[in-house]
Amino acid sequence: MNRKKIIPILAAVCGGMILAGAIRVLADADDSSATDEKVVTEVAVQTGKITTATLHGYVQGYGMIAPAPATADLPAAEAQLAAPSAGVVTKVNVVEGQQVAKGDVIVELNSQAAAAEFERQKKLYAQQNTSLKNLQDAEAQLAMLRVTAPLSGTVVRVNVKPGQAVDLTTVVAEVMDLNRLAVSAEIPSAEAGDLKAGNPLEVLTKLPVTTEILFVSPSVNKDNDTVLIRALLPKDSGLRPGQFVSLRIVTLVHTNCLAAPVQSVVTDENSKSVIALVKGDEATQTPVQTGLRENGLIEIAAPEIKEGDVVVTVGAYGLPDKTKISVQNSPGDETATNSAATK
Image (cartoon, rainbow, N blue to C red; front, top):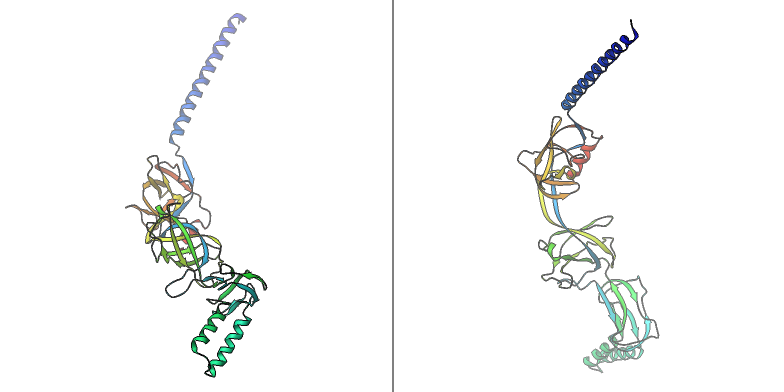
């Protein structure tokens, strides 16, 4: 065959092959697109269960530990002992940390002459050679030179030494009953409306201490917009005067309410609380009303939700309304959720 005729024939054959290949590629692309449309995205999530629980509402704050104030039955648990008269300290009968009983003599002033006069009057009175008034006057004079403990407790401070001059303004020692302590706190007035005497109160230390509110101030401190509360602490609480502590007060108790893991309740694009309810391999967003939160649980209410229902926890945020899911729970995930409900 003539060379000039061969070249056009080859070109035509090659062109045909290229066109056929292009048509095949386009067809494959269309098939691939159709296949992609049929693929349903499966989202990996973790789940938990709806439980029933008793949940509490709290007001939280910070307080200070101090000796208990006076009550109708007991004096204040702390006393600063002042000199009853001017004089010179002749004897200090205690050291810091010593236990004393009510009436024990803590400090003596220059009382030698007064003591001698009191003894003389006692003898004279026994012999009926002086009046009862003279004896009582001598006793009162002696008492003016002795500082005694007004309560049983611990000597927490001694401020004087023998030979030191004192007057009526001198605090010579301090005695405290460390078994009678109280916690006081200032709660913002906006949060204090539900507080009342008898509300359970918990001091949140390493070993929590439980008690109840004794006193709620009827007035608001205008300087910092707070309300003062006070609670007596149980004996041997392990707390110390001057200690700064965090605390919480129970104001609400909801028993046998439906509760879900906190992370399962999310806010949708309409700012509504929703929960992803699992049925089979699909999760459906369900609106819920929320309430109290405690121990990793949140109170919920919705007509179609009941105890034992499974909900999405990890992966709930941003989950579409109806989604095919693949549950990827770690061993013990649901056990942890259920145990939190019992706390």
